[in-house]
Image 1 (cartoon, one colour):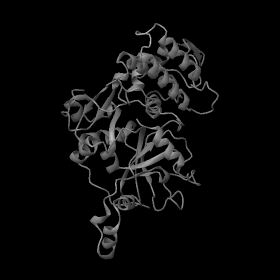
Image 2 (cartoon, rainbow, N blue to C red; image 1 turned 180 degrees about the horizontal axis):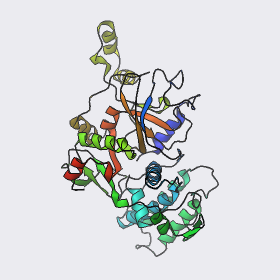
Image 3 (cartoon, rainbow, N blue to C red; image 1 turned 90 degrees about the vertical axis):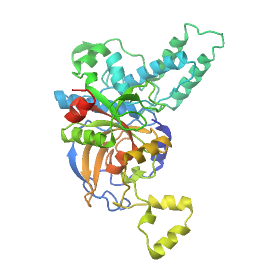
Image 4 (cartoon, helix red, strand yellow; image 1 turned 45 degrees about the horizontal axis):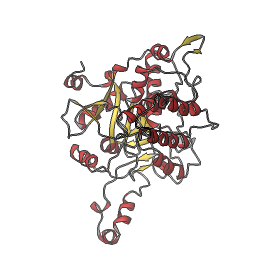
Length: 402
């Protein structure tokens, strides 16, 4: 998920002076005419801050599993994101070297990376492993990512004509310097754990969680590896028609279960300063007389910009399977960011939205949450991760999950 450039853009946007405003009110004068009323809200843990790190996938996945633990066991936990991030760096580096550098090595990841690490290596509480071992109060991986890339690019060139036995130790040295050494055992709430035994104590079965997507260049009701660079595991996702994907999302939320959401957030209609994401219709479809005359005289750039100047609810495009596929095929839809959908809402005109929990701290219009219209979700979702119980029985049967 190509997050760093997006984060820089978001950081440049002005923050609301009334970030404490509730979700069902107009937040500021600059955010005009959006009045959201929450309909479904799944209980969730606190909003975190990934800050200057490309680890949205881990913050979203960890938040989701924290919420699943809360739903299934009633425990409210804060689990380390950086333990998972570190283990992914280790395995990504190994794969990068084994494939002679002919694969993606980056900070980004996919929705399947958290369950991968928890199943394979375990998990640890945040208070045991914060990953802040380099003199900063918040995550900033700018130097770390540059150091890892430089090191691995040097190793993969094999200047000595073959790899030595030391390169993995060198990698661990870099990771230890920034994240801190991984504890083999630790004490937590009066018990001694290993990362593996702690993950087992959480009471989740990772095979209960189902990744899904919706693209017509592969058969429906089968699996395929979604072709985005950050799917470095080549994890398999169940492919369903768009109507089924929406039904799964809605059924999950209606039954008190949130879900992980990977999506394109680099669209002009994703306006974080306003706390909303829309897919507006082209304005020329409804213009008449002098308005139309003015519109046709605008440059293509100005016309595109004006389309996304909305100060409240506006008419949006109708999203079909074909349009969604076209956007993915021409790479207008890109794999940018991982988040958690935690509810639904309506605006003052009755338009339906999904309430999304982000990992960009709480100093925004809706305290770290934002509202994404139904057309935006249908058009710009890359994939989702849900509990198998969230999938309607008729769809689960077609997927051979029941």
